[in-house]
Image 1 (cartoon, rainbow, N blue to C red):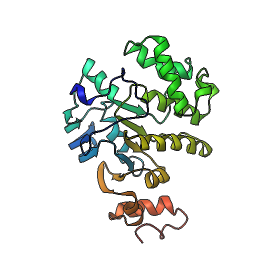
Image 2: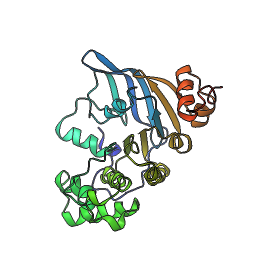
Image 3: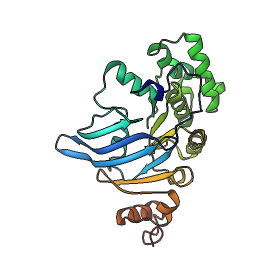
Image 4: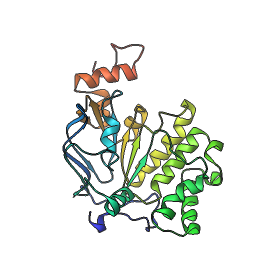
Length: 276
């Protein structure tokens, strides 16, 4: 990957990113993924431009999470090619894989915080252990990030002292600590109580305004409708529809997308709503 296209852990920017206009941050070319005989991603072609916010929606088991896990090699591609900033991003190992993951932040569904570390130490750990930062400098950056996600007063708290929403905001700060150009979210609110969802979505909304590239697997239709630049609908491992939010929610084209929206948006009136 070209060094001049990748933010490094040494750069000072936190919530700012200046993508080149109309360049592809992520590109899938006929990508498929199989687990044994079961094909979970089928011949996907997808381009996500730098600075674009994309919501990936669809029923459970449609391949949404696998799709984004392929981007930073949490899963390997079976067939096809994925490019990051126009550079091949497959079968990387060692320093090349670390560089890729420095450029791509990932926020998991279940937080994945270390229970024995404070919020500050969870955020700063990668800078110290992987990138060789001095502890005081790394912790200073971690505190700044925690302040940005509204947790400046929780830096010395342990995960079990935080609510689910607060833990997920720590996880977002951790994903941002290396100043990634791309951040991936795998259903970041699905493990939260309903009252805590809003605080996480507000942080994501601020991120969306910053110019960072975001790919968000989500069941939160409010995020997809109000914050995303584009909505992708998947089922059966395939992308069945791509559209701007207004078109997707008011004028869905694919019959499967129409049925999905009817059930999600109008659960008590399945024959009313989207596409009708």
